[in-house]
Length: 506
Image (cartoon, rainbow, N blue to C red; front, side, top):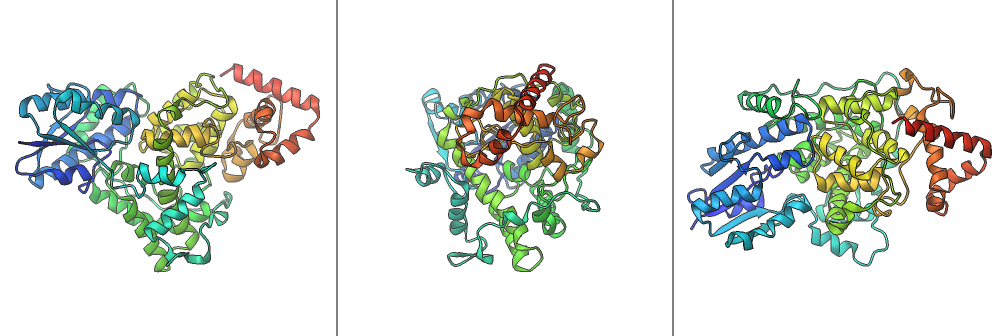
């Protein structure tokens, strides 16, 4: 009897575990562009375009390898809208002996898949996702009996496990972490290499037409789409990054600049998360560049840490604490998401720049996500659920396993201090130090209060006052509260009043 392999849109890897169980001569592969997966949040137009085009190219590659692929496109007359309905439809025709699926990256899908065996009356086998270094069980074992889950210690375990940047059991360079060298502020005169841009082929053009027809009310546009949609082209992006961009990545990974969305960032996350590149191969390219003296160790280590440290850690947190994790809201933030998160129409230049490039590209780098849009959301007490849904919708590289802990935990500090022991909040001074945004902003970065004061300034102090009971005993917040204690009480009251008035206008 035949077997079926269901391949999801973020599993576009020829070595994916479920595919290894399939005989090309007898078994079937199912891939589908589903309404349920495009609508649970209104995903960015370029995100849908990237995934659908990459899926179609991947299906074509499988067919060239003589696999039998049933590809249900979005307009297929038998597209039933959900994974279960689509599998049930195919199962009714072929009566599969086994259905093979690599474990998905979202809790809601895993719970759904786990009900199928009973519903379908056949064997449904869920395989581990080999693309991750640590399985969910590995992370649980590491986390066992720990009072706090410190990413740095988990990262060191991943370094030992992979052997990356290691000399036997010692870290190359004598240190595990070179992050102190990676915080240089913005300065004039920096130049940024041009990026590889891939013109849409016939397949991508068809998807552009489809997205324009069905998803025109979603954020973004399909204009000027230039992302890679095949492994071959994704490898070109990787090679270009290693050669031309990585040498400067470490020093300047935290800077922001007007009209410069990519700077020294790799943009490889969308290819890694979709399966076109493997995390380990990407890290090995960076390691080799260091070993060949092409890049400094702070650049190679910082980049590798983001992948085998942070990325793996965040996935571990997601699976360790779900489903309750998604409902956490430590600071009781409930204010509705302002309209400017969707249209970038705000006088705050940092917010305008970060959101406008998100609308155009479906991309913003980690400091923009954390210290601009995330920082504002935290300071303003915006609805945790709405903010998390926004981050999941607007970024091409966003899937819930990676988006949720980064947003809920890191950006909003809403997860009971699981991911971070302190909130990542800052006044406008930080944004001014790390960018040139404030130079053309209508607000004055130097003013704490008044009509022209930067909103980040009075929102920052208001946040500290509002949440004093929660944070005052946190040793990592001691300096902030010492500064607050020195502030005149009338000034504190004025800052609170202005913050409240500003928030009422959102």
